[in-house]
Image (cartoon, rainbow, N blue to C red):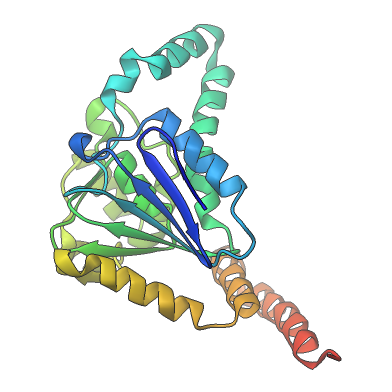
Amino acid sequence: MEEGSGGLRCEVDGEIATITLTRPDKRNAQTSAMWSAMARFGETLPESVRVVVIEGEGPSFSAGLDLGAFSGETGATFATAAKTGDAELEQVIGEFQRGFLWLRSPQFVSIAAVQGHAIGAGFQLALACDLRVVADDVKFCMKEPALGLVPDLTGTKPLVDIVGVPRAIEICLTARTVGADEAARLGLAELVVPREELGQAVRDLAAALLSTDRDAARATKRLLQQAPGRTLEEQAAAERAEQAVRIKALFAPR
């Protein structure tokens, strides 16, 4: 299964789905049409998919928002919504966020394969994924505040969850670049590899993830995602409930 839509290619091959940003001449700058396409792909993802990979063609993962969008259809949408009120503007932004939110689903593990520039929306797309495998030339940057905007594509919570509030403030409000070594130290990258080894490293990680039991993997991801918001007692209860389901499944008559 394969489909393409204005700067995006979406493919499903067995248990692995791949979304490729296909605007290398624009350093894979993103548009609202791409976000809509990502949301649609997520909504129609087959149940069989266990790993979702996000990658970018060319030397950059994504240089962020295509600023030309502000003078095109997206700009017209913003202008119209701005005249009607905050609720309308928030609804428009909420539609954009749909392209990122589904990547957290416990039904699969999402991996960002990041090389070169991952700026603004590119950084947030990487943060929307569960895991980040990065090339040694990666350049993360949260550029929005420097442009008079805020990061609004669901990137602030994972950034704070990973690096903490003080470091997130420093990274965002200076709009500085975070390279591969620092990304690994801060936990923004699970693995750093030479640029030419990025594709193989992602394939190896996907294979390792697929080697675990599907239902146990999904239940474990649910437990891990929900752990930060629970007390120890609440998490222990959640573990008991999930394990009871797994044991019943293992010992059910066949």
